Image (tube, rainbow, N blue to C red):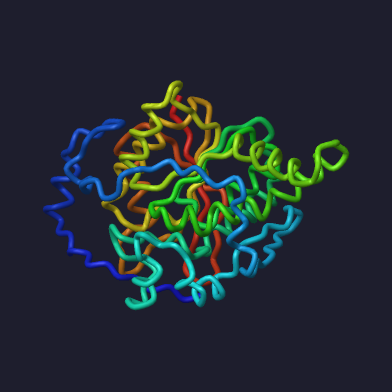
Length: 316
């Protein structure tokens, strides 16, 4: 799958890098390199019948190893039927007219399933990872496949976050319910309430296990920290989110403040994002300067652009 980018990235000189290295690197700091807040975080409350508007859409099945099949709204059909969808951000039209999968500060790529998501799913399959009783955050979730897998494998709560509200409302939420409604129906099949009541009960039960958020990472972090109690996550998934070095500080702050002290971040990424500027080497250097997390390489993929799955855990 080809991806196009619409970024205007200034050239960075050695002098700029030297100045950046002089910054006092601390967890949750407000850094001069952090961009101003771009989109306020919002917590979304799905309808009790979230699939009512998707009956004419076409799901496809993604099968990886021994993982349970995952359903996802078909990307091509999604694009062709874009005018039929609610889109207050107008990102569907902008991505088509600008022929771009990334428009910095406006649309951050959530309508595509990027290659590294499959790499991380394959790693989970190889390791036989289960999520029973875990609280999970799917950060920069897009289609939500990583969080959906965690739900299907017993996670107690999964929160989904993406920059764009349109992505959450028109893609993430429908995908979650496409994948989980059968599970809920199977659990309820021997109960006595009528079918409609059972469907509503199943939906409410699923919503109790999910949270849906949009907005930039700084405001998302503030929103969660204002909750009582502020959540801590056993696992944070994030895939293809380190393409822009301007976002590293806010991403690192989310890890610092929302990860449980014994938790783990699974990060899937390309070695380098051509035309954008970020990549694993630069992010690893950033993390090492912060001296908060230890990075461990878990999986390398050599086909096409070199890709990696790594983990971050707090230094002891």
